[in-house]
Length: 403
Ligand SMILES: [Zn+2]
Image (cartoon, rainbow, N blue to C red; front, side, top):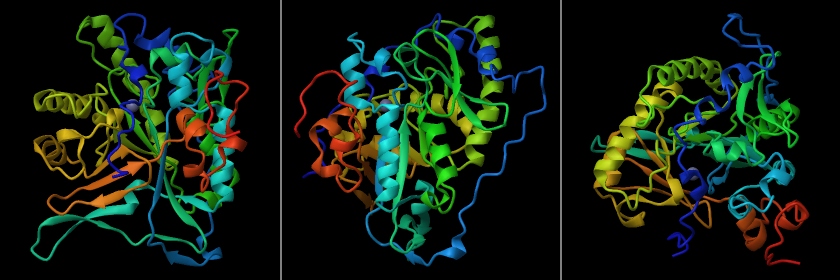
């Protein structure tokens, strides 16, 4: 049916370009650049203390149990500089397909807010319990939201700041700024360093929630879906088969230390983490042994930093075991045995299903991006109107279904 996504074998075909064994590391001395705001350098052991986040007053509203479908939208990193992203090079159409611009993202957030969505943490929606026979099962939790509001999960794939993104108008990494908050570091089209809270999906959402605490009654933000092959969050924390030198390892250890305060601040401000596999592995195509080795690597290099997670986001949206959500084959069983419970793909609706034969939830997500802005306006009208959102003037001149 609709759920079987003939959709796209997509997401980040772009990211499949390898991280690269040279030059990619540290992306031009990212450690030092990362402390460009004058904070969090190794010479300054004292981290600045961020201001308290505004908290929504739950006693000011009537809370009701929401029993309907929990909508789930996911984004890729957002385009900070369209003139670099859509410059006609070989990445332009891919970025047009799978990303939104900062301007579009801002409009989407405002529209979600205006349409009475409120953010919830994916980890709060389902949890593990036992059935009458004592077997582990997933259950949908009671989900209390302010009356009239609708819960919404946000997730963000490939928050790794891949080298191709650095050259194509995206921010380069998250950093801690002088005020202790998260900021992004990047370069404008003229090559000047820019530290901002207005150019990156994470810091933009943080700022939006600070300004509209009722958009996130419990302080939830989104779930960051991380691969490992280019490191995480802009820090080159990965091992590389081709470079086992002491210099690489030394740099890697520096990057690991540099990313720790970023992870801590993300967690403190409502962000959570999920796996997107270490190598952006296609779980439909790749054999079990590859998936096992990849999962171990993710646990060692990413899980060891962000902590345990029960959320798995399928790269390319490709499901294991024949790309069929009804199946519970050997790959699915293996992944479940490693602690994953919520298995997220991509679809044409926010579909979820609690599996009966194994303790797991299947969960499809919708994808605000160029393909759906151009071709799926109706399906997304409950969230926003593509006509109001799409930045037609900066995107490549390609087909649009609406006028
Ligand atoms: Zn991806």
